[in-house]
Length: 440
Image (cartoon, rainbow, N blue to C red; front, top):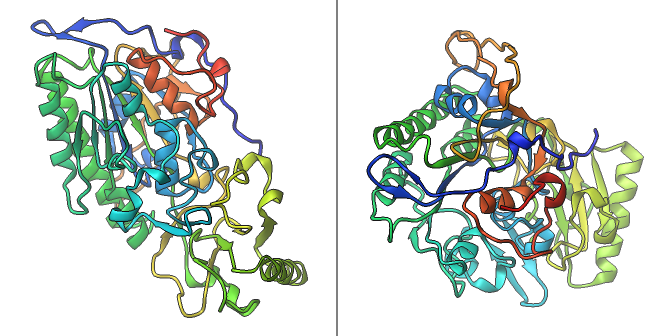
């Protein structure tokens, strides 16, 4: 599969220079809301049950898909989107990993440790905004709670049971603040679709319900903007971090069938892949050769790399937090132990060029007018009695305003340009000279 690289977009796709706008009663500085929907696979929007997502696409721009960074996991990708850096550059190389310099583990489930600023490199976009005298607001976005010297102006802490509607209401309350207090950059993380995909599978009725529930909540935000006469004043970006694939125990690769796991450190850190790190470089090399031989002998569905052998297209070798040996499972397969098995039916993390891992990007508002392209049509029917549980409804194509695919490290600059932030030369991994032709 050909690697996705950022394209030179048509002029209409480049965010317009920001300017002060009015809703008729109040002046609004250039403002953007970024909503990230964890686990929203790009093709979910073809199921005919997300009218509010599609209305955003039809009113503005939509990419064929946005390519996540490798590994296609939640924390690395959310931080890539708002720093413009690949995981190997910003340091959040997985959801859990070991840092040999600190001699400590990072685990996203242990906030007292994981929010220490020593883990988080780069400069998140909300920090860029504050540095340049703008106000920012963050709702549960991974990295938003890091105790860095510069924090978002407003912040809603992570709560696992926080309803998506509460997040939409918080955004509208910030929008209603006086101009001198109102944030110009707002970012919110929404987890419902990912949870449903993991526990029930991407094609399950529960995942369909989660899609519908999240779409309805988005509708509340859209209606709130329209009621305030702000739907043509405030920019709205909808993105996701990765997709999701259905897996069964038959797709598990039990690596303890091939190696002795007793001296592995944090071996589960890259599931569905496997990171090999031991206390002895000699032992690590032995395991590398054992797995290489096993793979070649039985043509097993994985690849074994030393860190410096990982293909360049993954941008995943230049950081000591990456395990010395990485075993990459082929898409659809999961590296696990016999005693661990598989506790979910939906998984992500694979090759970022895998179709099931594709994420979404769409945007509407004054910086994102629709492209002048003739409408096309396409259809994917999901009847009421099929396994998805969707109603019989054709997908109204949003390809009218379709952009070519691009990598999620470009998102930082798109957001920055939308609100007029300046970016330091060489501060991101995005190919912004080609992707966005002119500075604001």
